[in-house]
Image 1 (cartoon, rainbow over the protein chains, first blue to last red):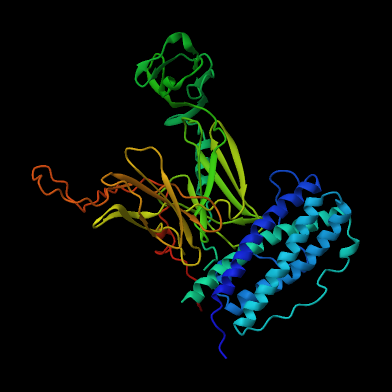
Image 2 (cartoon, each protein chain N blue to C red):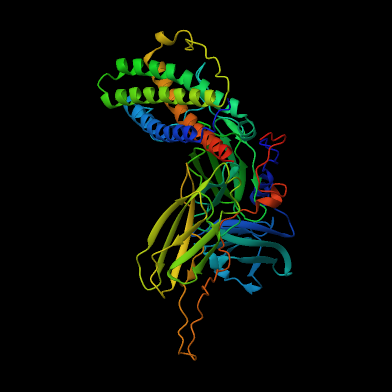
Amino acid sequence: MSAPLPVTSISQTYSLAVLLRTNTAQLLTTYLKYQGSPFSDRGLSDHGLQLTGLPVAAASFCAWRQQSVEERLGENFKAYSAYIEFLQLVTDDQTVLNPTALDLLKLLRKTHSRIRMLIGKLAGLMTGLGLTIPEVAVDRLPAGSLSASDWERKIRGYVVCLGLTNWLERTVRDLTFLKKKHRQ
Amino acid sequence: MANIVTSACCVVLAAVVVVYAQRRSQQGGRIQYEMIGSDVTMMCGTLESDASVTWKVNGTDVKADKVEGPRLILKEVALASNGLYSCFENPTGDLKDQITLRVGEPPKEPVVTCRSNTYPKGFYCTWHLPHPSYIPTEFEVSVKHGNKKLEFQKDPVHKNRCYVKYPELFSTNKYKVNVIAINALGNSSTYISFDEFSIVKPDPPEKLVANPVPNNVRRLEVTWNNPSTWPDAENFPLKYFLRYRPLILDQWQHVELSDSTSHTITDAYAGKEYIIQVAAKDTEIGTWSDWSVAIHATPWMEVPRQHITSTTEAGIAETSPSPAPPSAKPQLSAAMGGSSVLTCRADSL
């Protein structure tokens, strides 16, 4: 029972990732707009902020290039499984911090559901290729997440939104890579 | 490997020390740097204030009313004031000192631009002064990724250019480049920051060729190569923008293409000479390249049977490629170990 080459499936996942990339770029801009200074200032830099439990997209070229198909899809799957939870947290935070920012809240929810779709597609791809879907720990948010200050919540949302845009750049490249591979 | 094994750029600092030094010696020349428009005093060695000296500039006498003891005073110097000033003690005529006057200005903020035409390998930055300073000016460059200092290589061919390898891909950290311009009259600096993706701009496509299609008066077959500087078109594919028009019209036709380095124009006006260009862009990020060198081509024409004297040779397209444009292409292969292809050791794929 050999799995057929999932060319269509990879293409569809690629298209979704491209759509999400535009989506998340818009989300980042909209998010920053509503948080006030210094988030809404020009030339904002993240200064290498990271959140515990939030996967970082950055990788050396060689490490990224040398991944097996299983690792490549697996890393994406794990990353977005984590982001889904952080996104929900950011949505909850923003519902309190910026309740009248309806476009932001809508965008957060739309992104959330599309990421969910992406996770589904990635799982489908892995199953179709006979690969093991990695186990993802439930409840990955760091302790104390719910009792953060307003400032911490805003920073957290920024890191999540920014990190998401970078993950999608990486995912789009990953899927391009896989598209080429499976065309052979 | 993605590891950075390049030497840090610190040659500049040594030159800075030289530029600042105004060694005072009894004999032998020294250089005196002064601002354009300022009043300048030149001292003849270490002579007493009641000494009497004669000054010459480039061998010609300097006007006496500008002399006060061992001092020569020049008002509102201009570039024309530049020269080798010599002073001779009276009445012996002994040469006591020689000063080269160089008039100039402190540097204005350098203009700095960075670009990646070799994504995902690295990027280069270039800088220049917006206005001349007229005196030797050195540049000190530093590059940071987030808070981490990055090493870079000076370009072996282009002055005022350095090359940086991307330490990692898909990074949220911005790159920060600081360029300080320093000369004897002052210094100024420029700081720019950007992310990995925004500076990506490939070089234009190469070897653009257009051939007529036999027996088809409205077609031209166009092919081109990827820019040779783009390291991995397989995994970082380019898309293309083709534009063409007959020489006699101003309006361009445009076609955007992915996945193919050829295209057949099917709506050419019969018998008309066309001008054709192509540009390239990474399919996902960055901006379009500059237009390639333009080529000229005319669709196939039937050879008229009766006219022997004025023959238009059918089937020969005028592909007159201009000499390669003096575009900003860093000569990386020599510096980077003989290959512009991306490699990783133990490439399992």
